[in-house]
Amino acid sequence: MNNLYGTLNELLVKLFNDILQIEEHSLKDDRFQDLSITEIHVIEAIGIGQERNMSSVARDLDITIGTLTIAINNLLRKQYVNRTRSDEDRRIVLISLTEKGESAYRQHSQFHDEMIKTTISKLSEDEMKVLISALENINSYFKEKYKLKRKYK
Image 1: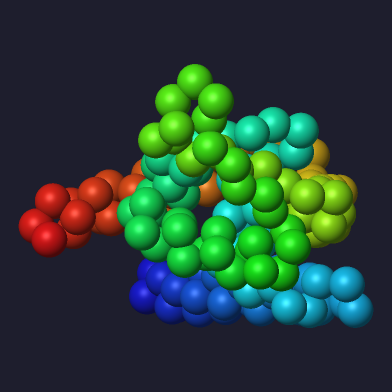
Image 2 (image 1 turned 180 degrees about the vertical axis):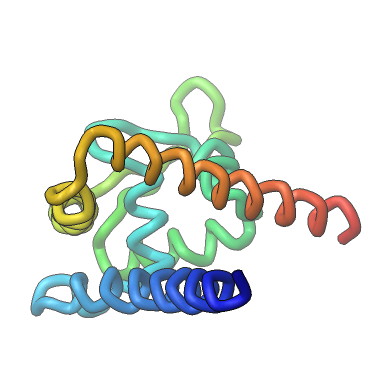
């Protein structure tokens, strides 16, 4: 049993690290080499074809408005996002993707699509259900641990 635990630990650690490295590498073509993985996740949270307010994007990413503001300032400078004030309430800051930002979003989305298709390509429906259940358990564990830590900060 210890051998199974060690193998699972090694696989999970390697998988988490590899996904982050591969995800970041997939952005490094000529057009998007100036983006960090954090910035692409901000772009992903903003989404295509909509204006979103800063607080909702920060909430979705589970970061502060201040942290998001820094990322948005960088993305503005790199011309991936637009920032405007709401006509109805000037206190509300709205953000949306530029054409360049939408291209980065699409490329990142394609990376995720390919990852999922490859992952499930050789699995039966029963195996997919087991995989989904196992990943939900892992996700629940990390969410629970993360929330416990945040309560004490």
